[in-house]
Length: 423
Ligand SMILES: [Zn+2]
Image 1 (spheres, rainbow, N blue to C red):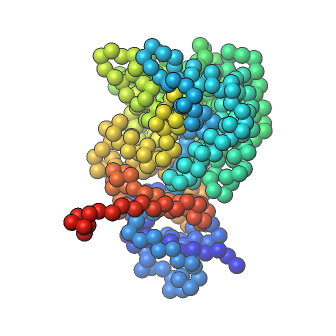
Image 2: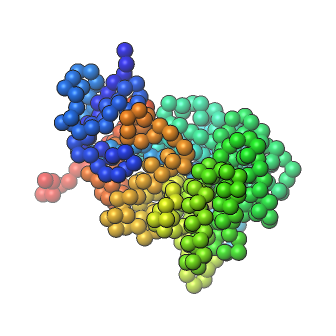
Image 3: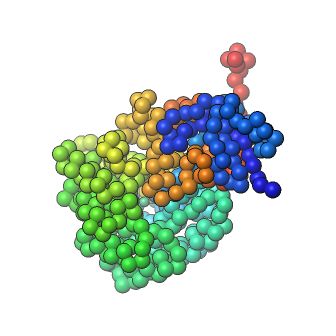
């Protein structure tokens, strides 16, 4: 006996978010999409063969996808003073705290991140897990347990990530290799944490090639063009035949390059099929603190990258720690922050912003069965809004979050107006 549902919504996003299907219907069998159609075009026996879920005057989209997030160092803002003028960097503050992380502590905080993310519409996530001489493999142990515990609710991919660089001690490189052999699916580098950025990048490409895993770099996070690495990462991606298997987070430096130089770098990223991930909430908090004349906001050139054909996403990055004390794994919130911070507020831009938290990150993660099309997995989010613009401006409630055809989160928002105002 198969498990069959019929979800009815006023608007259903078309495959690839190309537009909206009015009076839409999504037929699901055993967790996979059987058909996406108009209500009027449903087979006559659909209501007899499927259990009907009437969603009402809402928008139905494919589930949100996080590409770049750090659950292992979330919810530690209350353990430190945070950033202040002339004080230590966020990296330094967190490195100190990390020494005391236990497996249980990491598990508890990371689980809270996952629960919040699911409530807010996330159905797939790729998370960084720090590996170094300070935390060793304790965060790996916690996140691998969590990955198993949330299976069926959230697809959680893990990145073996070298936040502290790899040339400061003798054990980080071995621990990274050990974590990949134990099953972490992606290798994550951070060139600006080592003095020789190119040697760092080379080691990551060599290791990724040897172990057959994709790469994810934190790169070009500062504003000195002399430190640029994304052009070299693109060059190596092509040289090693890894097109489409390399992601780069931050890329803030792109914003300060001369326009002609920027265009050349963007073209190389496009040729190498690099997936760019912008992290606006963190950039707004961390960047531009030393400039006495003007406060640089640090967001990469999202619209230019997209117009040039680069696959660009946005992601949460940090949650309640010195990097982003107000971080929250709600991608609809990140879309609003992006609209505000990156000059993306006209109607056309607000209409395509949802790509940056759905189809584009799904592509970056290589989620082959993602999207609102026949045969794909029924990973869906239902927003209490008539369209993307209103969903973003009003921060619409995520009424249902559906994973593999099963409702995994349900929320409501209740408000009452005084009689004179109520319709
Ligand atoms: Zn990060």
